[in-house]
Each structure stands twice: as C-alpha cells, then as structure tokens.
Image (spheres, rainbow, N blue to C red):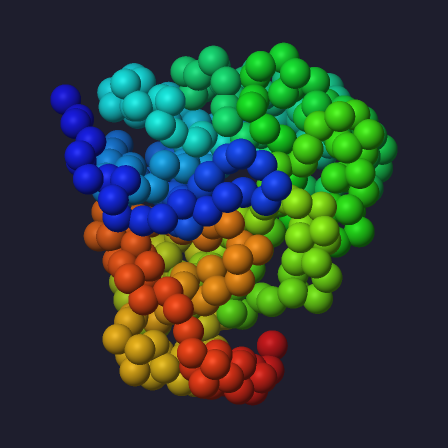
Length: 332
C-alpha cells in the first residue's frame, strides 16, 4: 500500500493561479505520452508516486491521451483505485476535450454535445466524481464561443468540474473566452499554451491578456519534446522518444542546426550548475505570469531531475541575455 512521503509539502513553493484561490505546484505532471499501453503499469505507478512525493499535486490528462485514445484516463482510473483515493482531496486532476475522440460529427471540436459527453466519459474512465479543472483543448472556429464557454460553465455548475480552462487559444480568442465567462458570472481559471525557449510566441501578446484577465497560465512542452535536454547532443539514443515513439519528435527533425543551438544552451546550463533540461524548465518559470510548467516523464528519475530545477530557478540578467543571444541565432 502506497504511503506518501511525509515531507512532500516541504520541497516546493506553490503559486497562485491567476486571480483565484487555487495554488498550483510550479511543476505539474502531464500524462500525455507515457500513460497509454506503451508503458508498463508499474512504471506509470512509480512516476506518479515520485511526483507526489516531490510535492507535485497536479496530474494533467485529456480524453484522447493514450495510445489508444482514452487509455491514459483508463489507466489513471486504475491508479486511483490502487493509490490515490486516500489523497483525492490533495490532488488537482485535470482533463480536456477538443480534439478527435470518437467517430462521427459529435466526437471532436467544441460543441456542447461533444463537451458534455466527454466529461461524462472521462469521469467514468478515471473513476472520479469530478475533475478539478476541465479544459476546452483547442479553439473551434465553427462553434460560437458562447456555446463552448456555456458548456464549460454548465459542467462546473453541475459539479463535474471545479474550474474551467482553455488550451491552445491565441490572445484574442483567450480574451473573448474570458469575457464570455465573465458575463456568465464565472472566472476563467487557466490557459494551457505551448511554451519553451524554442517556442516563445505567447510572449507577443498572450501573456498580456492573461495578466489583464487574471487567468493563470500553465506551459506545456517546456522541453520541446525532449530537444531541450542533453539527450540528443551526441546522436539519437536507442531508448529515446525520437527513436522508438516518433509521434511527436521525429529523428529527421533533429538537425545539425538545432544541435548546435542546443549545445550552446547546454553550456550555459552547465555553467549554472544545471542540466539543460533543468534550465529549460526553470526558464519557463522565470516570469510570475506562468503558474506552472507541465512536465512529462518516462521514468521516475526524470521527475526527480526536473524538480531539482527549482533548486536554482532564478536567473541573472547576464544569463538571460546569454540565452536570448543564443536563441536569436536559431533559424527555424
């Protein structure tokens, strides 16, 4: 029987999520890649336990995470039964709907029909009465935003979720979503965009919008699919994601130009006494507008390494300038 580490809340400091009463850990665990049928259940269990023992209280899923679709939620339901029921009130569990999930016109996008069915399916798979955060996973240009936000509002009002969020919305879409929510009398809690040293587009205007609207921000992809690590500096290891699971990072995308930039960033990290992965995670958290960085892991040691990024999360102006200079030379 799993018994959580007694000192789990002494290891990290929690951050307020926008203009809300909710605190999130600076690192959250995403169950995107490694909680489907490609990872043994026991390894998944070790990853989740390592995260919680390190103070990570937020586990993030989506209806179509796997593979196959729904498998991450089904596995998480088994984990709930094995380990997490005694700790349910200490956890923030989130899920999403918005990408393709089942055949036909009602298993994708942002209609009320899809979102209402999705939350019920997700709760059943995860053996939960409610999730803490339910997200619309991506904007749907063909569905009125009032319909999508109205569905999120009703899901929260029904008690099936405590908070509502969005993911992958641009700045104008985010502002509109927040305003629609405000008119209904509900605050949009959080936005989940892609953000890393290799993808800084949210800095153009989205961060200004979430500050203005008091919306929290949780960044997915802080390691850019594993590129922002030391893993690929000397080739593609046989056990790497690019070698055996190229759904999201393909070997052909690991170019010499990228390796050259990664090596320069790695040198800066090592001068700071960190691995590149640790520096990349810390970098996404340098602006207080980012409530949490969403990490993934294929083994528990990776979780522990990423948490150690918080031991040296601050940056000097010289370090930030050096990183910016390297990134200014990237050609993609």
